[in-house]
Image (cartoon, rainbow, N blue to C red):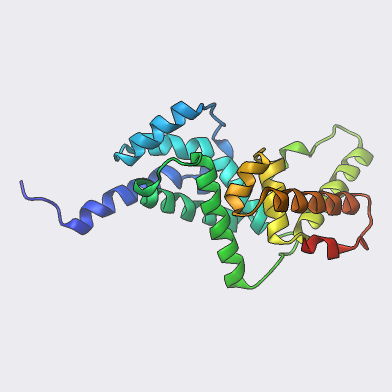
Length: 233
């Protein structure tokens, strides 16, 4: 039997990558987080490097929610974050043969997501988006804040105002500060892991996190005149 042309042989795994990972554009919020161990993860990565599309699909399903959280934390726009995640998983699929395993797979993935998001911000030349554009779907990142508080309209209004102030605070952070606070508070990475993702020192991570938290807290206390000069750190 004659061999398929080279471009067709390369197109097949790429199409499979789109099918595997990139269902996240429509299914991301419904995929449960799956427990993993470093050894189990390493086995999946090695299998995916050998061309096992099922292993790659499993990696995507395990990490797509948190990859989306990183992208949304930087871009503040759900659609843009989904697009960035799709691009990131395609890049991961293409670059898997060169992944040497000197870092955890997820930190490598997050670094790709962060770089793609920052590139997108640079291309568009904006530092923040409007609140309505930057709000995630209720079933993605807002799970920590109540949406329905029974029949108490005052509590519902207070929760709504709190969410809006929180969104405004995040929108006003620089991309670097949004990234560090998302990686720490949402993705629960260590300072060392964040430093690896962001290619900076642990001291820089700690400084950015301190100032980002301080600014968000000030906004939640309704202090809009908080000195933002500290966020240049």
